[in-house]
Every structure is written in C-alpha cells, then in structure tokens.
Length: 110
Ligand SMILES: [Zn+2]
Ligand SMILES: [Zn+2]
Image (tube, rainbow, N blue to C red; front, top):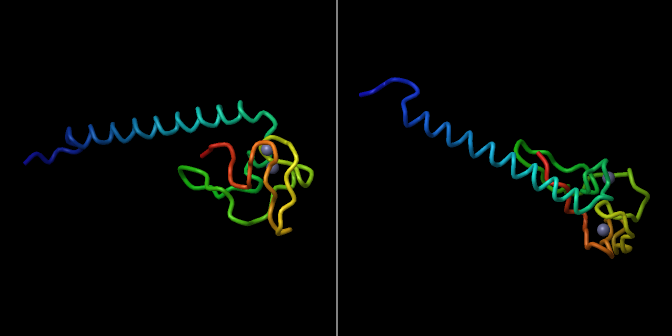
C-alpha cells in the first residue's frame, strides 16, 4: 500500500480539475466579452438581464420574476436599447422588436 498523500494519481486528478476550472473561467470571460462587443448598448446596471440575475457560485441564472432593473427608461431593451413590445401582462417585460430579447438573456458572468 502506498499511503503517501497526495499520491500521484490524486495529484494528477487535482491538476486536471484545476485546469478544467481555469478553462471554464476563461470560457466565461471570452463569452462575456463577445456578448458585450455584440451588444454595446446593453444596460450596465444589470448586465442585460433586465433584473438582478440569480448568482450561483459558477454561473448566473436568468432572473425569475423579481424586480425589473430600473436603470433604463421603461420599455427599453436591456440588451440593445431599442423599444420593447407591450406585454399582455403588465407585470412582465415585453419582447425586443429589434433583437428579440425577452427578459432571459444577459452577459455571461460568474
Ligand atoms: Zn439594467
Ligand atoms: Zn433589443
């Protein structure tokens, strides 16, 4: 029995996990940059989500209900700044006529 710790196998596994994590961070950073380049007029306050997204340790989840972001004038798209359609339900946000945004897309982020 080799009870040295960490043994070589564990060390290799840890190294692999660490690299995967670094890769995931890099991917998100690159996606966020692409997203921001694509939508230069997005709302900086909410990152284009239209509300405070739910933060998880490793990712952001689109907001589920909650208070809409108030950084933009009402009826403006949080992603491209254009006009939103009038929603049937006044509690909801409309859909963007220009980019199709619908309260569920924002800059990728941790
Ligand atoms: Zn906002
Ligand atoms: Zn839009």
